[in-house]
Amino acid sequence: MKTEQKIWVALATIGCVGALVAMIAAVSMSKGIVIAAMGIVCASIIGNFVILFKHAGRLKKIVHALSVGSQVKMTATYPPGSLLKEIGTATERFMDETNAKVKALQNENSDIGLQLQLLHRRKNSVEAILNSIRDAVIVTDDRDRIILANAAAETLFEFEFDPLEPLTLEESISSSELVAAISKCRTSRTAHVRHELTFEKGQQPVSYDTVLSCVEDDKGHVLQVVAVLHDITREKEIAQMKNDFVSHVSHELKTPLASINAYAEMLVDGEAEDAETIGQFCGVIQSQAQRLSRLIEDILNISRIESGLVKVSKQTHSLALVIRDSVEMITSYAQEKNITVHSPAPILYDQVTIDRDMISEVVINLLSNAVKYTPANGEITVRTDLNEIEGQVTVTITDTGVGIPAEDVDHVFDKFYRVKANNKCAKGTGLGLNLVKQIVETVHGGSVFVTSATGEGSTFGFVLPLSKETVAQTV
Image 1 (spheres, rainbow, N blue to C red):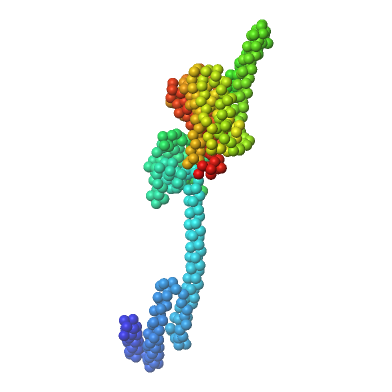
Image 2 (image 1 turned 180 degrees about the vertical axis):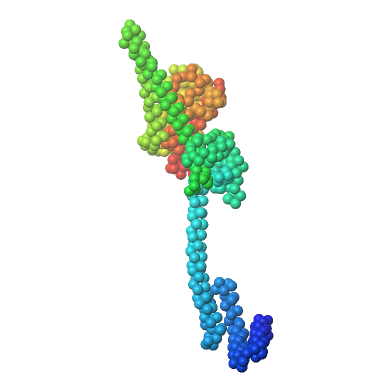
């Protein structure tokens, strides 16, 4: 016999004994009818205990089902009019109510699970969006701890964000200015505030347009501070370049216009009394007007190339022939200073796809600069090298001129840049070499270079890709 059955038998025995005791007491105190009634009660109690013992396994299953929250259906039958039937009826009613509650809880748990999945997806989506933003984003709580940071912020300030172990601003951000700005925004409860902050990044100053915003609850308490840092370094550089461009253009335009205006006034005032003086004044006015025209033309050409509006007509040409024609145009100018120009012999396969007029302008510009900055009796050598493996051709123009100081070599192709040490040798606008760079690199996909040493001359050159037909022939 199992332990549970023994327990039930013990309970039944105790019940019977109690009933017998009650009956004995009743016999001594009451009449015979009472004795009979007590006998019936004892028999009923014994019978119910027997039935309870019989259905002990069923009750055990019910209790187990209730303990694990399962639904149970009552299918057992009980003797009519028995105490156990009433218990069973109440238990069935209780189980029906419990089953309904369990089903409701299961539905509610299912809804909660779906909501948790939706919140998880939204969280992942927000994190993906924040990490895709190029601007640095930092969110701090009411104790100045970083509770959210995207990848751009981690890269900028060189820290690793861990949502489980939030760091303070002082521990993560090296910029005391930004830390102070965030703390001040939180304490002052400013809705939106803007700062321009500069940080050192790779030994270079980087500027950021920083927007700070407070997030408050319904009671007006500041919960978080959101900082968004937008890199405006390039924008500031462009703005500075525009300012420099306007300044240089104004200066370059002002110089020839001032000369033209001065000599025109002298002519109007009659200060030129003879034909020779008049011719001299008119010559100055003409040369300055030509200089002004070249300056305006160079500015327009550079602007068209940079904006992509220049008209380009590319065809296949022999680069050696283009150089030969350019050398012929500059020879007379070089002979005035007794400068010898050595030009290369034609190359068999040096075909390039170019805009002939533009490349001619490049060669003439480099040759004219070589003549300008080379003293009398000097030499200029033009050389063409063909690289069949790389599929490109290199043109170099070497002079025996005054050379360029080392600190100026990297800037000679910049707009309006002129080497101060060589200003006395020749006049110019500082746009010629920049135009050369724009034509070679932007229009033709090549590259320019320069090497020089003070007092030893300079070598300017450019590289162009060979045409596809030339590459095919040389392979």
